[in-house]
Amino acid sequence: MSEEKQPVWRIIFALQLFLLLAALDQTVITTAMPRIIEQLGGFDRYSWATTSYLFSSTIAVPVAGNLSDMFGRKKSLLVALLIFILSSVACGTATSWPGFPVDGMNQLIAYRIFQGIGGGAIVSLSFSVVGDLFSPAERGKYQGYFAAVFALASIIGPTLGGYVADVSSWRWLFFINVPIGLAGGLLFASCFHGRPISVSQHSFDTRGLFLFCLATSCLLLSVSLPFNGSIPTNNLLLLVICGALSVLFIRIEKSTDSPFLPVTLISNKIILISIASLAIYGIGMFGASLLVPLYMQSVRGMSVSQSGIALSPLILTVALSSILGGQWMTCTGKYKVIVLTGLSMMTAGVFALATLPKDAPLPMLVGIMAFVGLGIGILLPIYTIVIQNAVSDELIGTVTGLSQFSRSIGGTLGVACLGSLLIYLYHANLNKLLPIGMPSSVVAAVQNPLEPKKLQQRLENNSALSGKRELVLATMNDVQTAMHSSIQLIYMLYGATLGCAVLLNLLLEELPLRSTKTETFQEKLEPN
Image 1 (cartoon, rainbow, N blue to C red):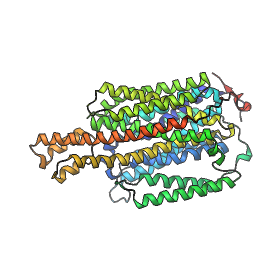
Image 2: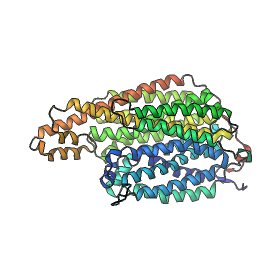
Image 3: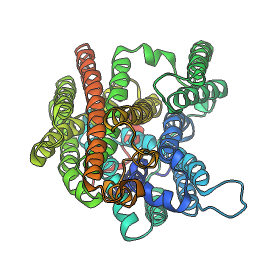
Image 4: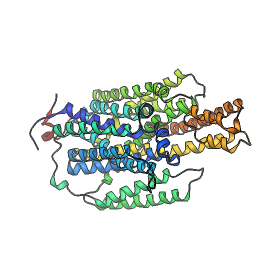
């Protein structure tokens, strides 16, 4: 390894570029999907364009962390970036060709799987590099900056996606990753030298990796299959297989000299409470970026740009309070009070959203969202440091991957389960509200509540409702009421889950934040 000192702030800037791209691509296409479906078709696979990315990135996160502990952070991160850039180009070129056996939507879903592998690894390894650069006592303020970028990108993604799709082409949502990714990659490669890696670390638990990926895939697939009010046999079978594979995985990891995931980590009470809380937290992180725009557009009748403006207080408070949370942790050296504060704010805010009437004043709605954003942001940088502080530096990549995996799987399961439940609740509520004998063409039209202005136009142009404007308006009101009731119940369920997380974290042990690191690496850092 070169003896040249490493310019820390240039490394941090490059990592923030990586995080910006990876976090944006989790949610950026959600509001652009109507345009994508218009060109590629495949409304029946609407959610899979997002779920496929979250699916593969969730699995990639801990794998990348483990590999980077053995083969080095620099090589691992640059490989992940290359996968991300190439798959982004592929996503932007997805199209339906006459006679080609794979249509455009299936192409996009397949390419998003590879993009998720690169994106998930980037997120995991970026936070691991911060662990290489700074001691736990110093990491708070830097992780806060990183968390702010991650939060800003994750939440602003839907608004940005809708805007780009409106003014240009949805394909640029993917092509823009190429120049930014290459610029960040060149900067990172020239600045970061990485930790020295011991030869003894170069062993890999192939069986553990295979079982972990297989068990996680079964779990994610089990909640991603359609939900129609009862759990299908296929879902139950996948859950049973997941359970069996998990038991086998644990047994193998206990008997392996170099386990993919040391089981002793899970037996650590601090790590166990933290990863459970991160999974619950992850549901809210992705719920904020998906449910809020859906509510704004489907219930309030806002355009994409209007919902983006209304969402801005949430975005700003998450970004600013992420920095605040990191600074708070660095200044006090404590984390339990921060954790309980953030979770309590999220719980109170989510319950407030669940009880708001459909015609609630917009300033009240925006104020509550900003309050929830404060809780989300304060927590964002904290748990990763808590987990890193509980282990030695040699396991930073593994435990960082585990923390990001927990948040990712919470978000993925949340999007899949709550998304399917939301669709089911919407259809069930709508069927109760629509008058008996409503023409089938009208019932078919209102199955998709997205873009209410276009839906109203379709209803007005429907021959069965010709000249019946009052019935059109009543039907639109039924659509909005059904969606509002469904979203309210989702928020209520999530609020109850957050309340359980608050109680769980009362048991979280407070360890002093370590102020030392591996000196041979730390000495080579250039502070300015």
